[in-house]
Length: 241
Image (cartoon, rainbow, N blue to C red; front, side):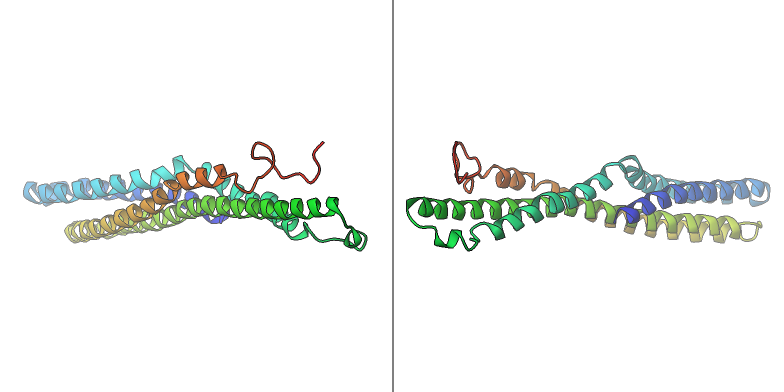
């Protein structure tokens, strides 16, 4: 998923440059033929191109956010997996092994054996609780990271499509007879594309915000020390020295 995100960020940068170039090339073609188009037509073209510029700027602002905040997302992904590999997996292994007596301990009797049995039960519960919490944290971080990756991928797709429209318009506007059609087609395509893109990115961003708002649940989970029955909410030691 890290490589997918990094690829999307790279594609965003390339597509922004391509989109800006396409827009500038189209403006250059329009200026070249301005003398033949006349003032009324040039005013119509200007209004259309203002709409295109506004749409381009809006989308660039949204996708540029990904590039500016790219560093934190891979860290989220890596940290999410570390919570699994370094906390959840070891804790779950410990939980499964606590209480398993070897042949010698099976013959252990008396008060010490009873206390040990009680402590081992508490330890198994504490280790299970730790594993559950680690899985919860990992899932939470991964959800945030996944939302950011999805945002980046969709942002890259949409800015790339916009760049394609601008590049094609610049090609189609190579002659005075094709400029009007090229500009009109571009303005309509950009309007629809940008509106759909902004709505899509807004929905994804809201999903990420919803995940971030679960920080209260994260704090509550990590602050719950009920399974830590040792002194002061610590690990339930079998032997206290």
